[in-house]
Length: 243
Image (cartoon, rainbow, N blue to C red; front, side, top):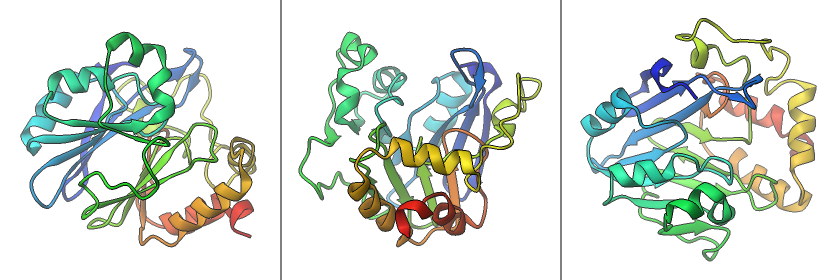
């Protein structure tokens, strides 16, 4: 992941994204994105999924004191240790499945809360601004987040929106191929979501929960931000579970 080519922008008031090029196995150009939110009390919440390079660090520190560092699923854990090192007073909240990942084990990082391990309906202190729903039936053990003031859904691998134009915009364009046929309205996306949904009943429950949230924008970790029409987009992507 090339931190030098990250695009930093304020998507809407108090919501900042850090969009970087990233290719799985150096072949598949999926892009990566972190999201930082300044909460109404002045604290900062970060879904940490991209490198903490100089410009990223400077912008986050400008926003305010970092109180939460979030790992959104079992694969979005690589940069949690470096964020914790830079912001030692912040609480790390991630999914239980990330604890066993070799990078987390090697770093000695300790979680302050873990979806999948903590009792259901556990709160972590940011719920006045951000709701969360843990998809226990999803292979990647993802968590969906709703930033209520901006009506923004934030998530990692529950929904992709390719091609990753913004994430590759400073790196000379999307390499290899565009993934233009893999978006939330595509057959490929629906079938991938269905296949990754290992517990279908749990997936139906959690997909319905997110559907009932009030949001218009979706910020994915992979692919372009969906600036409007997010509720329709989510419903289409998950219609196999919502029917």
